[in-house]
View 1 (cartoon, rainbow, N blue to C red):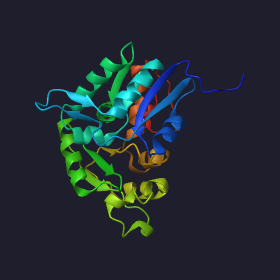
View 2 (view 1 turned 90 degrees about the vertical axis):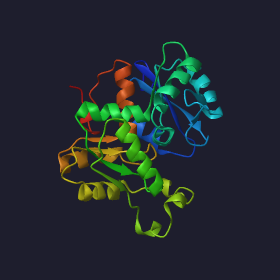
View 3 (view 1 turned 60 degrees about the vertical axis):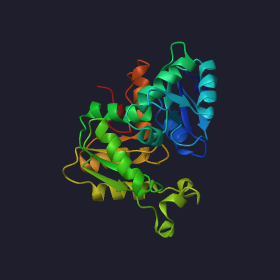
Length: 262
């Protein structure tokens, strides 16, 4: 019988941005045999769940709640909110609050996590405390500072923050217009690799590439080899966390030290 990508080891549900092709492509590239990936696409405003008046609980966006009910019907082993921006803009406590709400909706034995927590846990696993943080080119200066503040709440001290600079033909397009101009569909991962290697400060003990829409898992090994530092990316971190939550210790080659079993 030929391989049909049946999830006999685990099924993972991933909430992703409706217009992004990167998350599914990267997850399928890295996923070990016997693990299947099931996406629920979200078009809600960021963050995908909003705080109530006294900042104690969050209300799930319409897309997020609908997707949660769909993934519940799949009996996914682990479900992840694969959206770095929601974790960042939701702020301190948002990850925990959205996990509580999704666990109520999904029920059963399904475990829930968020990309924000996945990245923090992944850095902890590789001993990263002072990461060189890479931001997608379509995020503005305000997001970069908010991301810095969020990472500090996670116990991290960014060595530097760098917004990836796309190819010259996008030079005159403001960050806020790059996504609407479909730059996210024409990303140059080799250019990203070269910029990270050239700009990483010596004092950084790791590299963190946030943004699940940033095309980057294909260059993880190149960057680790060149810098001698562990590299964590958004989709890599969430796959790793889902595997560990599902009790899967499979070693995966080609996508960084994080995914190689001890």
